[in-house]
Image 1 (cartoon, rainbow, N blue to C red):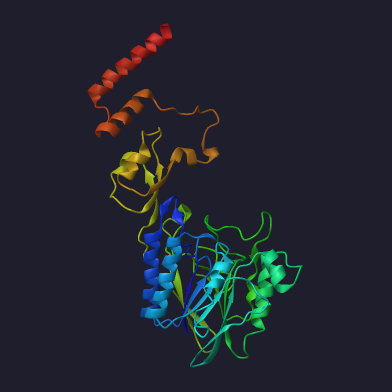
Image 2 (tube, rainbow, N blue to C red; image 1 turned 90 degrees about the horizontal axis):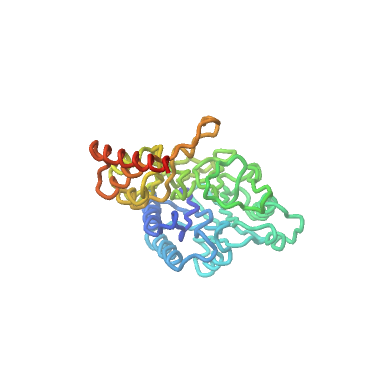
Length: 379
């Protein structure tokens, strides 16, 4: 049975204030195309469909259109859960009308976890969908006041799901969690209170033949080859610059063993960190990529972001390499360097006319500055 594992779409999210609606449209198109080309039988979306509990109308409309395309253009069943960014009730509301023989959508934790049962030539496959739940909600759902951590929540959900799996069926679990040993990025929101332990051990999923995880945005395994994060389809921070984003195609055989293939997304815009002098960067090829510029100039440039955006309209961040050096590389006795007036005048001319001071102009400016300095000293 072929399963396409996706997660952490975060519809409605912006990249440093820039809309990602077109970028999301591109990756949703690629998911539908992958379903069609590979004759995928089950699409899994492991949470964080939206970026916030009350997403913009445009994001809701975009996702509804995507689901309609999956239903109309493919034969794939859908298994989907709410993540920690989603409103569980909003996701649960999507489960009211879909075909129960083809769709399993879970928004809130419940004490009963019936699986979606599908079959191939080797028998039944049970899909359990375990939505993210905070501890307080899980205590009420499972009537268990001792639930006090994400691990407790997930173990309660897994116990309920495990009891509903038919004898001899292969078992696929979808969950939204931070499994111990996972590699996080800057964009994930903590799953528990400040100071709480948010990780869960991989052994909690014992008995499952494949575990489709959401929450961490980098593709990776978590404690075992069959316990995997597919990662987010887009990079949401510069710590992921240059990282290849992918969805995971899982081929589940008759014995429950899995073959994994990562299918790369082709993002509409990349995320890059560019390092060099301002002059070097503005001489580069124009690009719509999201850019962080790290300037190696030793003195501040005039309006550097304005000049960068003439070449990179989606430049989002600016830093100077000198400010990022480790403290131990700077001498304790070295005075802070300041921009010289003649350098600032040269930068200004470079900005307004595209060329700095030539030799003759530099001599005139130097003489004028010397005269000013002499007058100040004699005053």
